[in-house]
Image (cartoon, rainbow, N blue to C red):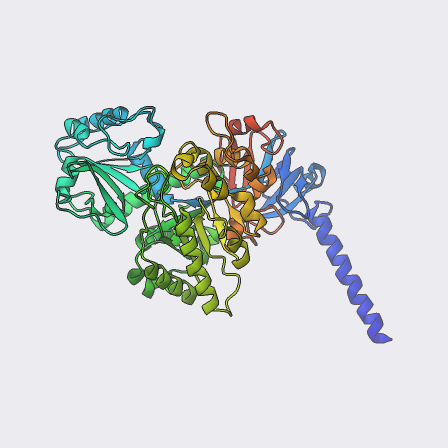
Length: 575
């Protein structure tokens, strides 16, 4: 009897404690300390099924303290509480960019921006202007061009690509290297080929191609691994370690500001070498990294094998840096005919694309990832590349039956064979996809694949989700603008520039699209316990939008703008 009374007394104490805690979270008692920051008078969508919506949110230090009505949260304000009146705007979990190239986002701002050019002639004019401001022999760099997006084909051309003669006329003494928007090809002028020792006898490397004209002369287009033949910086003084680090710092700082201005609070970096990770860590230690980074190591197996244990970091520096994945590249891109296909291209029947990395090399990476507690993330765009990648994953999983919930990732999963779609859900593979690629690439996908193959497996978000797979969203920046809003719009509309809709049955609902950019991205990096949704105890990472993208007419979604980006309870960007 005494034990029963004691047990009931303990239950009463616990119950009273929980009741006080609950009221404190709601701001209904003095037990709750004043919040550091309060967002109120808006629509807060939490992406938390337990409490989907609220009017206000209270933040203490870098964590969410409470979520509730405006009246409840008002009780948690004190004399030093910063209060932001949302004025009816939408607050959501901070966007998570699930696949971008962080340093390159900054680096692209230091080169010619060719993303929105309309023709090859326009590029030639931009290069001519850059040469007029350059030192003799200085390299001219640019990126972002895409031959399929020009209004006309250059004359002469090979497979739609120009020849280097036009660049040579405006830049005979300055080497020029212009990276394709996809990152899977580059165009160089004659001086760059001369300095790189690319001559008529030079053979194309495995997994790449030096594109030539009918006479056998290189036109300047280096496809896939052939880009490695370009000796960037040849003829210029070798930069010192200090100069390289300074450049890296500048790129990272520019990338952080660009991402924050677009509402991104966590950026999943799709591959950096160890030296760049060193600079990231230094910036975190110095308090100079205003965004959260989740990083894939991208370097050859021999270089990273002895250092993986040392570099593995989880939530380092108050959640500013995580390193827990290794990136490999199985094939190229669809736009450059580098995606590795099971059957030939419709518009290039002599080719099935390129395998850019040998299967045994990626299998060795899988072994290293398994042994060191890393995720393996493999770039795979074509259906053959995706099948080969899933085969590697499945063999690794079967060889390590005691290891569960590995969340290995296919980066892009852009074109799949129907037989392979169910495998994602069955074996627990993350599909890290970029919805903006669907609408950006859509105009030429049918040319490359034909209608039947495109319908079967191109950007099949619904088919993957129905298989049980998690789909995480992103932009592949700087391949596309890092802005999540256009990619979100592509997710729910699949609308091309001409107004047509690319296989509408695969569209996401608005909430599915929001989850793909928040909680799914967090899950894809094992970070769903501290970000990706708004609930007490999680990081206070919040994006505020000028318009409610869950309610406004679909065609108005692209007009929504970021008004606040909050990282760890601090306003990192304000419009």
